[in-house]
Image (tube, rainbow, N blue to C red):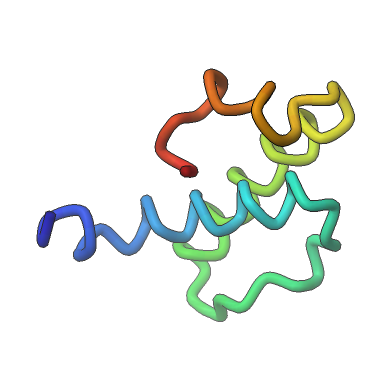
Length: 68
């Protein structure tokens, strides 16, 4: 469990995915570090794609179980 908490890049990706899935703007990225921002944006892009595909709620759980 501690190892998962320490991985900042995974957390940035997951937070970006959640933001994209909920329809938030990419300008809402909270990270100033270029590497964390890159992971956040990558997650945001995938989340936006899933949002547009209708993968919200229960239908999206099988897509990315790390987000739960």
